[in-house]
Image (cartoon, rainbow, N blue to C red):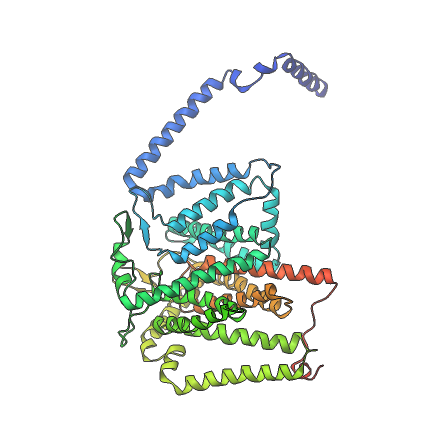
Length: 544
């Protein structure tokens, strides 16, 4: 039987070889015409099916027809063969433009084009970035290596983030509305993942971390300058002057125009280009350590600009009228001083002990002075600890936590992200369940495991930033300290703010920390040095 099989195969090979090459193709097969007709009929059916769904369901139907098409398109792009060309792409410029426009352009103002979803300039730039990445990375092995080497550099942070992503996928079948959960997760993954991958590719040149931070700081200063005009006009300056080819969500327009004042305090609360004041205060919390770091290292005439920025920062904190902004400012100010003090004590023990003692005394004196000012000032207590104006929000949050623990007890795996939580949040007049803590969203949405993955990844990145600062040799590596404080401020503010559109910013900052940490480890390895051991505080002051 085996011999007959081999003979038959050999005969088939000889028969195939006698066919002329130009006729040995699919076009000359007997079934090819029938396959073409079937493929054309299937394509026409899909076109009619897609058009019918869009005509009936509008843009909401796009999610049904675009999902399989998108999956096949991404698979087809990923299977493209590698090409031998230079790894050059405008990803850094597009990333910087995208991150600047995300805060420079009001996200609630969109271009009104009939038949299209919510289109804003940041989304247009993000679309260009995605198109470039989807055509560049599948064909350039060097680009894939750059991004993956940095994203996976710290295994613990990578595994924690992977745990969060896995839990996002696991909870989809358990959700009440799986399509809404998938839609939210895909949008969030595109917004955050594109920024992270582009940053990982760009930060192979570690100098671009500082350049991107500089662009973000300038955008941050712009948003604070906007608040001056906004506070004078008592509403966002562009509302009332929006051209006809742009639109604002009519259901939220009243909220955007209103003062968003606290109960018992009628003062207008500034929110710059953000629709809600708390969203702006979280952005302020992320960016203020980076601005303070830049102000600290300003030289020459730039010091005059640093002095001018002080009242701008203070007026932003004051008229935001949010504890999250004032606490973030204090963490950024005293946190950076504390990092410098800890580095002088534990990692530079052979320095001048008198200098170390003076530094410790100044930091402790500043902390004591601030604590005394808060204890003696009712207004400072209100801006940090809270007062009667915050009693209502504190009680509502306590009720939400009680409902969250009940929901976790019923379903410890999670119910999905991006869906209303009526058993947890307070239902507003429009029927929307409002949750005041991103911690609750994570715990109920992806369960305790997902929460550990998300917050654990950020905590690990913050710790790497602190350790990089402690062993820093120049300003490039010292930037990791400011980045770690930004991540810390996000973790703190997420306890009282439920908002995910700033996640792209904090994760990009985390990628910057990884880049600086890897740069430092390579430097230490090239110098043949090992990270210094942590000495005891009692010996650090007397070591010479």
